[in-house]
Length: 223
Image (cartoon, rainbow, N blue to C red):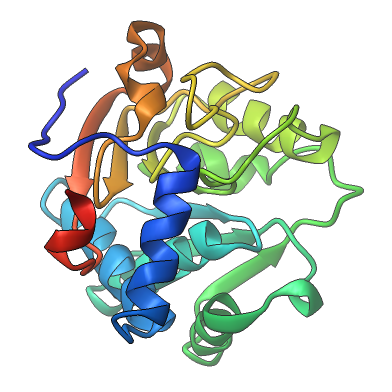
């Protein structure tokens, strides 16, 4: 596992607190933080690929919103990109909903994955050069639900390169232990700072290389 960091690792609650403070105390719009994170993800991939298709697997939270932003920027650079939305669009809120609407109006292919579907489309998985895992974030607590478990298995069984957004879906932020199951990523782009669970040596089989990306949080919040 390659790690880049010079600031303390964050627990789940610390990550939440920094997010709240940036928005409420510093007045940084949530959608700006999401835009910065998503753009950083796309820039990382654009430095690695030329024209391979990218398949972005998104949940309904901010993690999914980061993935949708990344998809938009990749599409703007001519990359063939599709989004699997593993949530009812009617449940999307805030900045994630805004970015979903932008992506839809931009003509990016969005494939709805209902809670009755057991896996992701095989054709999209097999044709992807990279999969972006933007399904579940650091806030996950308790065992991964059956629906998400099957989606994670689909990603892992695909044998494609996986980039995890912030944390591999299913990995506990604080312990670095899978909550039943975890995505096994080639690289994890974690936002703002390392997560405490990444210090667990066993987490490396799930995170792959870990790189910190900038979402625009004030440095003074990060210690």
